[in-house]
Length: 415
Image (cartoon, rainbow, N blue to C red; front, side, top):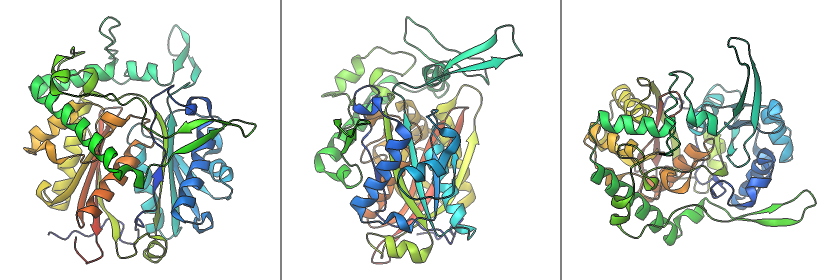
């Protein structure tokens, strides 16, 4: 296997120091009623408790989300206060690239020598998302009211494209997927087969219990401390029994159907980035080492978001000298089956070999934590296969793609 030096050689991800909530679809769980930031912070403490990681080990907090939340101004210091440890830290957002960006920036903190154990906390709640009132002096309307989730999904301010058609249930996001499908001349039946296969991968992983290694049932309490419910499943996942169901679905746009796209959801995910010494100390298996090799971003032409991740991966492979054949696990954030079909076509890559344990197209899309869960699934799969390179990539609003390669070396020194 080709050896590539990590971009941040002093930063390591201790194996198994990660986890999060299940991702229930919007308004299908008690998460719809909670302060998501406080829940996420308490969820981080809960996950670390399950993993046997003392919060006292953390000396910095890197957090990320995309949907406004109460007291967002106070960012990571408020979040750390909520789980009982006063830490410095930052909070970032970059639409659906947020999760991976937070991991990358946490590694940079360790590399700089500023901190030795950085907690990563990402979350979002699409349920009951807030609306904002903004002065807009550059227009005749003067004032704009924005529903943070739905208005941004339905309108791209960079292009002016709304793509919204009430009769078809179409938004600018769906329109960009259909537009990209036409650009690459995708076959509707192949996209249906791909979507069907993704569901089977998820069902199989769930039934095998693999997801239980990093997804934890969480009890939700009200302000009085009374139980109001449990978050113990990716509620909202559709049940498809046959390929014919996918092929029979009405196209919302070219190659875009209900079963071939994700859904809004709520959730949180957390992990740790640390120095080599602390990573070995905290790891659930000190003989396994995990490092970020490289990362890349790419902005594609306006209105073609689904192909941006493909170009980010292309850029990353050219920079490192690696190829897709060098990858042990390949996972992506795919709001549409179209994303995977484009990637497979450009790289002549077998899409059956991607997303072995599931993907956001199936289990949902809370934005902020999505790519952290994808990264964890990819790393767990790479460990299961004996080590090697894990490729993680995804798209984000603004026609952006992000990609990263992680290297996993197992207990026998294989990679």
